[in-house]
Amino acid sequence: MKIAILASEGAPYVKSGGLGDVMEALPSALARRAGNEVVLLLPYYKRIIDNPAYETQLVAKLQVDLGWRQQYTGIHRLKNRADGVQVYFIDNLYYFGARPGAIYGDWDDGERFAYFSKACLEALLQLNFIPDVMQCNDWQTALVPVFLKARYSARFPKTRCMFTIHNIEYQGWADSYFFDDVLALPEDYRQRLEMSGRVNCMKAAIETADLITTVSNTYAKELMYPYYAHGMDSVLSGNAGKLTGITNGIDINTFNPETDPALPAHYNAETFAEGKALCKAALQKEVGLPVQADVPLMVMVTRLAGHKGLDLLCHIAHRLLQEENCQLLILGTGEAHFERFFLDLQKEFPKQAAAKITFDLALASRIYAGGDIYLMPSKSEPCGLSQMNAMRYGTVPVVHATGGLKDTVPPVNENGEGGLGFTFQSYNADDFLYALKRCLHLYSGSNGKFRALQRKCMEQDFSWDKPAGQYMELFHKMCR
Image (cartoon, rainbow, N blue to C red; front, side):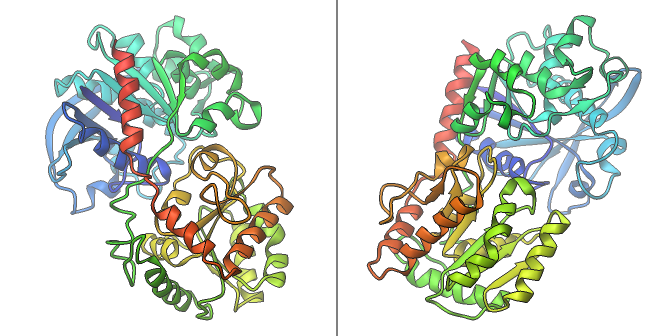
């Protein structure tokens, strides 16, 4: 099967969050399946152009019309990737190649990614790669199924389009003039794009794609409710027959405690007791906490944003550190008031709390390995990858039972049996604190039950093999 995957980011080339991780692992998992040809198209950002690690070759040049504009488009093929995925970068200096800094957040993001969506279709034609399936991701490529149906159906007569929602909070809103000035679509498409008097790219994709997926089974169900859907519940309810949840996997080669180069010691499910002890001691020393093997180390690697449940943690942090013999380590950057809170907490409890307000992938790996308990009290979480990364390294999760957290962390009982971690149902600080205390109680017991739970977490298969199989089933269903 010929599969084209279109996205605004993909690790290792460029990444701002979970979408980048998925776009590194999913194409590879699909390419490993016999008979598949997989192409990944990404914008040619400045940080990719400037990185000497990526060898590219210009294979085509063309002009792409966008409303009244005509934009140069270069197609660069990545030469040094060995997993069977063919990566192409869409080159336009104005939209991508000359802009430093963050990949999102420019005033003309709508125009930039409308261009990218249309340029991808033109690039596939130029490359003579007519896919059976196009898989598009989040609002930045939400216009692909719209252009495909409105302008390109004759040239892609049998191509089907899947749209995947990774985070419905970001929908691609634009002013109403965007429809005529930038998109220049037939008038009968206006209603599909308009929402509350403006243009909504994600709505358009939901209306026009052949199938819609999202990144966990529970999140697919949650999106039917206003609390989670950010105003899109009625649109999704009207297209519920097209919506399926597929829970993400993680890259088990990158996140592997047996081989991770960032770790001071390596281990597996059989040797984790000694290996994690060495990693924990080194981590405590690195971040300035007392090296105490018997004190539980609670950790969190996250964007410091409200929906990550940090308000709950802030509410209970003082009480937790005062009442329990434990340590807390936070890694991340984000909203200033959260950064200040954790830095102040570190000053107030220097022997129990540490805050690293930075972005550091190597330190994140050491935290996954050296921690005992991983905190993820997210208010909402489409899938979440960190909880699976933590379990891969033998760190027991405590999570709010929402979205992908509910799917990947079934609850254990008081003896650490029956599931993979400790969960709380209602989003409030007392329930979170109670779940934490239950986990700490299991840790402090001398009966080996916490270690048994760690081993069970490490033995889980969080690879992309199963999700890739589920994607293939849907692809075949679309093409019947």
